[in-house]
Length: 138
Figure 1: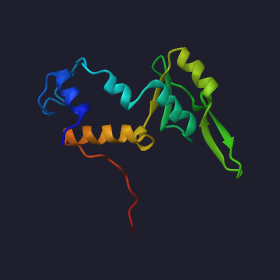
Figure 2: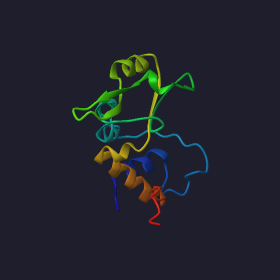
Figure 3: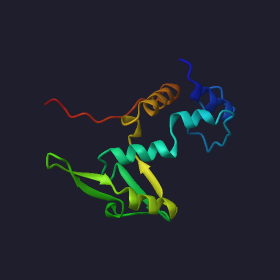
């Protein structure tokens, strides 16, 4: 399987496969940075956050190395059917981003098909399976 992202990562790091993974810290520069923008942009990430019901620990914010309490950026929204759902408070999140916070959104690939394909390609390349906990059928 050939994937443009995998080829670009190998080229940026001077690797010919995933063997050096986990051996040390690697730094490289991609010659096709537009490829990253096709996978995810800050605006696309914020769009995912704005449109999904997210809660901690899947969605977290850090400032100065400290994790912020979810009340700093999440609030409950009541749907038309009366269901209460945690949603990002985009006004608060915008202020936090402006002040230099770091956003962590686990399982982003579950919300975005392009990110899912990129993650699958990297998992295939690294020969590392996706870990997923499924309930036992007992």
